[in-house]
Length: 443
Image (tube, rainbow, N blue to C red; front, side, top):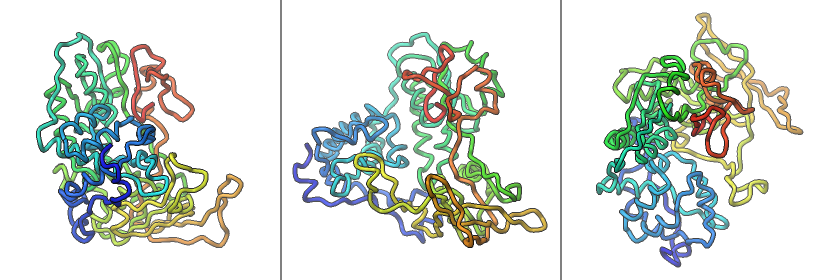
């Protein structure tokens, strides 16, 4: 193990963030560059190298966390990078964006603060890029097989990279104008600068992966015809059907899905737009939904110059300690303060939107809400708690209900869906259509 007494002698330290007043004036990542390196080896030394490392199971990728913690403690960054890449194609993405269920499953977290696994991970990969340890890995020989990957989010890119390295000829189809999927246009720049995606794409190009942008399978190319052109198809198109809010006034101008709002801010950063067509500047902003997407809307609104930002959540405010029904090592629902919340705004829990109110020009001006309680598994409005709040821009960040079925992809392939609207798959990620597989949130 790294430091046999590290978990006893070293307290938890996390990445240092830039001052709020500074970072809301730009779109750079919120963390102080280089602040982790002086402390991260000791932080990695807090890992106890448990006999049964529950962090492995907590991590959806099965990352070899104690192994690369040990290398990071010893500052053997090349070995740490090799172990990190053994299970994770893009640790610079997960190290910045993952909600870290591994830390909730850390054995040390039973009665202390968990090891800063995410911070160790992102330090290892940043050092690997800096030192040149991340290089293209083209296949030694080609298999003669061809594969189409639909979607260029994290699942699509990871599948494409592995398939290319195995010797197959792989083409990635993306309906947007740039590669990256949700990473490119759903994640704000202040959470992950897009240079991290760009250099991975260049690595993949050098390995032999082909990319086709602005091509939507189902609309631009018939899915059945695509299937005939390739030996196999991997669908990694995500779950992009957003949950809506069917209440009176929903049709008013200024009410948008989060994924209508966030991509425009990213396009400004890409240089495609000077000003976002949907902006929070000078407006009272309400974000409906308390998850990560909602927090992304909050942080974006701050940077665009909102007058006020209010985030609404229908569920009660979570506690700051594990509830009894979510014991270690499960992922607990805790009160979470993201960098966006640190920057200001109000968070309101246990409320439901009843309707929107607009002006004579059809623009939203107010949101009417009521307090709610869960009783016997049902949501009940509390009489006398109705009120309205100013709302000139409303973003809906209430999650997603399944993969896109309007573009024809599901129908043209003849795919079966599960009860939740996702593409049905077996234990090998195979769909009901021979040679067609599904990965990521689409399945």
